[in-house]
Length: 203
Image 1 (cartoon, one colour):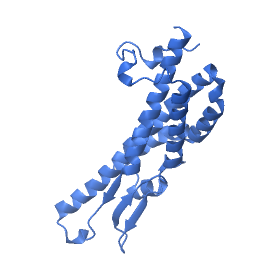
Image 2: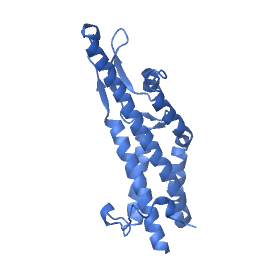
Image 3: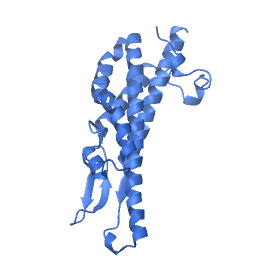
Image 4: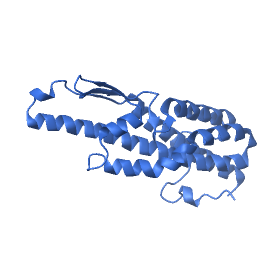
């Protein structure tokens, strides 16, 4: 594979992972949950529905978080390939790798905790507190509302707002540095069925 083709594939996969991470991050940032205050006045069936809605909210957050972390870890891999091709990005890559390093250690834990939610494992309060989700509670401790936002701790370690801003800056730098490679996805001549990431070699 020629160097230009290598670089095009590298930039394509790197930007694809960064965009996917940002998309998952935006879903997390916009997530909200509200619950009726007077649960005691509801029927048993309605109370179970309210509990199920909370479970689904936590499950969605966990799914999006797992997706975001996975894509950021993949972006780290492609960033290291980019370092070999263009020293211009070294400072930004070092910053990106430093900011996302904690996530490589918690990826397996995120998946494990996701499997345990409401299955006799962790109480939802553990997830809410570890991600520093803003919560409003009634006088007797019932959750009334949950709000995420940029202060959400991805994996319990990295601020959502910080990693989002860094990823956006990374994408902007890539677009500025490689305008000739910055193609809409439908114009990138890669057959997803026959050419996958594992088949691209940068040796």
